[in-house]
Length: 56
Image 1 (tube, rainbow, N blue to C red):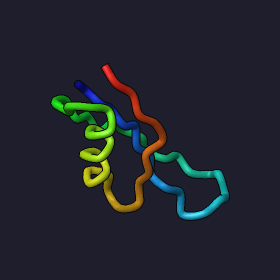
Image 2: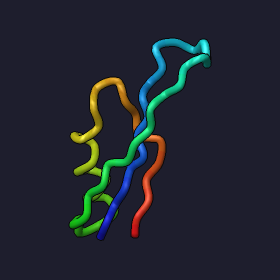
Image 3: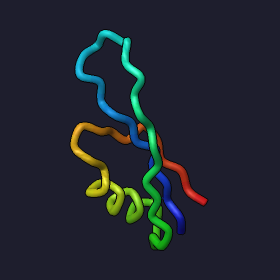
């Protein structure tokens, strides 16, 4: 199963004046959705957050 997470930079404050970078992290050989999510977690850099998951 392919599991994808969209991640985004966490803004430094709530000013809402930032252009935040967004990108995808993909795990292409997960046995289940839960395993894919668990394997994505260590791939998320410090200062970033997961904003959504999807599967194919």
